[in-house]
Image (tube, rainbow, N blue to C red; front, side):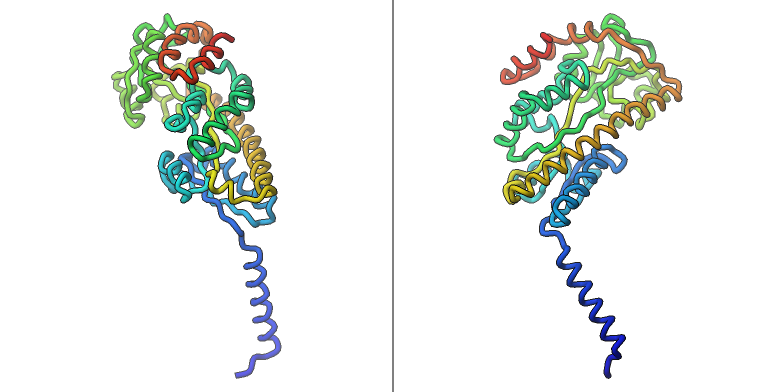
Length: 324
């Protein structure tokens, strides 16, 4: 059976298209896994990073982003990056298990404002943290994303540590958090996050602390009246690439990765700022009252407990934060 001229031209066009598609296929595909959901600014910034890197490399490097721990849990991803089976993740103070300086990413009352936090994260101390992570963990921070400050919710206004007066509250199972809230005058206890709403509802506990986004998504406005703006933990988290993956890149592609990472960081900050404002408006619309607190009084009373819980390597740096 002979093909018509039209048939031959169609087959030729299809073959040319397949060849073109093959020629445009990525030379490298990076797998980026993280714990946030698709609505989170970290995920959206990760997608932005992939788009920018593809553009800057003319499609030679693509990024596949896996949300919701679908590529693995945080520690598993870090281990995978060390073994060369995972390329990228978003991680923070968990890295202190290998690199002690990573604890500086989330020290209570270390940073007085997001601007102060930015100065540290992008300055000399930030450089030291990143260098230790590269050396000790074999993964490379290429950008950092902000995290919403943690605030205390309750059913009575808390303006100073004196107002805590044995307040029964839930904290994560982190010794530093437990000790700091004890020093401030509360009665803190660890509890699984999944149990917090019911425990607030039935009065087992009176308060909890978390960023506004989590207060909103967990519906705590249904069982809490006040957001006390303690801002007791300001922190950041890194977008990272495995050092083994980084070393495979040409100098030009390394530049492209860093340029794409800078664009992702700027984009995440825009989303972050918008989410803080939106979360506050939402919680206020649900009847929550925001309370300004005596931040200096909280910081002063927390100081000794914080210093008692940090290791000797970072203690002088933390002492410097409290001296500012």
